[in-house]
Image (cartoon, rainbow, N blue to C red; front, side):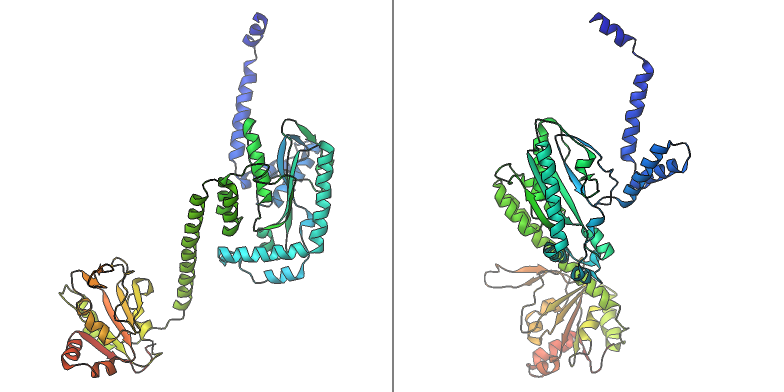
Length: 471
């Protein structure tokens, strides 16, 4: 023991310093971006100081980095593997699939402009075409032979493999591209697989970025997650095969399902089925999924509405000037008043009355309410901090007479949906808001009213008859 202590006492201090510098350099290299790594490699190759063998290896590495893997990330190909399990990704010249129908389907597709559900439908349709492709079927058969050969050679305990559609490259090139994933493990033993065994049709694999990292006792769970990643019915999945079944021969964590669903790798329907299979906190996860799907669909619908509004805005012409609006309606909002008149745009259909009213403050600041055949306008979505105009489309004189206080635009709250119990009543504050009614029968209706009602409407409104297009 004393001798060992003497050896430690006389250890070379320079060796310790080198170890620290090497560890620091490795940490800095991991933080370096893809572009910076490529620049460093290019700079080294441009110099004449590298030995011939090392320079040749650097050139091969540069080609690999330029190609990247299925995620566009820098990942060195595995020339040998030593360990107890990992996931590998194969892609090569055979990844390009000749399929006329699929290529035609991709023509003119602006993938980034598609919504989530449209992307999923397109990807699933292309994957269906790949399953029927003789070229894909032949590739899949040969890849299984390759996997089975390695499994038998090294007595690998568990194995899962899958063919998937690389949608990013497929959309960029307009031609379907596939890649293979292979996950294996053999806990309790270490295997060393040489490059001639790893190679599939002269192509070495990448260590997949989807492979979970773990050590010690966590390895089993990480390997399970890797197998599950290949076995779950993903949107981009073409073929899949495994030696062990999820939820029966190894447990599945609901968080794995959530992770795949968050990345849109699986559909909501698949996620729902997978949550049920896990049998843990099923109600909580299903409620979260259903709530998110409803919220996302509303968000997607709003995006489509905004897109249509923006497209239509480009077609808008400058509206005509209506003297009565400029002289009698708009000026009353320039100062504080206890009550104001509302605006009536009456006349034949297709004159642009509704469009004109919505442009007084713009579509985003206008609440359009469909008042056809109703005496109770629904203003529950009215927000005084957002809406500056309320457009009562097809509003009737009887509706106005029933809500006189509302259409005076008072400075106090106005109760709506009143009844004997008031169980559904609510208040709105419309002070300073443009109240506009568009109609094509207002004049006819007013003529049939009692004199007192018609006089009140005349005294509290600015009436405009539109006999020609306003745009």
